[in-house]
Length: 102
Image 1 (cartoon, one colour):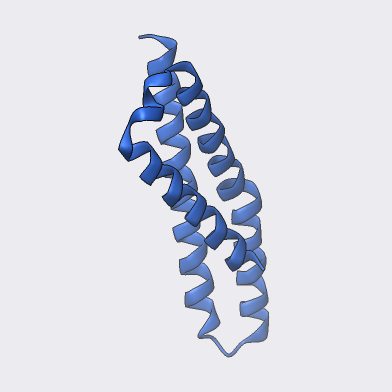
Image 2: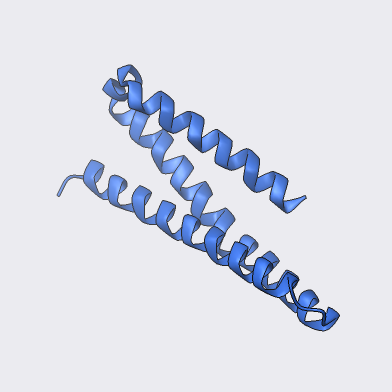
């Protein structure tokens, strides 16, 4: 397997981990916010912060960097229409992630 293929695999794996961490964080926060116990809500918010710091942010950063590296290695991607849509969705996800963290 060429290095380009390994970079693609790592890119997709990092994205899946980041997306899974985001979904897990969302479920933890939504499930525990319905609780009236302040201690339980506080613990769930700490868990959500930990998930973001340890899983979501690093995984999505790695996915973003590897994706950029892949486009630099193979310049034909810049003319592909789907790449522009993918980059728009990526920037939208990045903005929404930062809005939820605020």
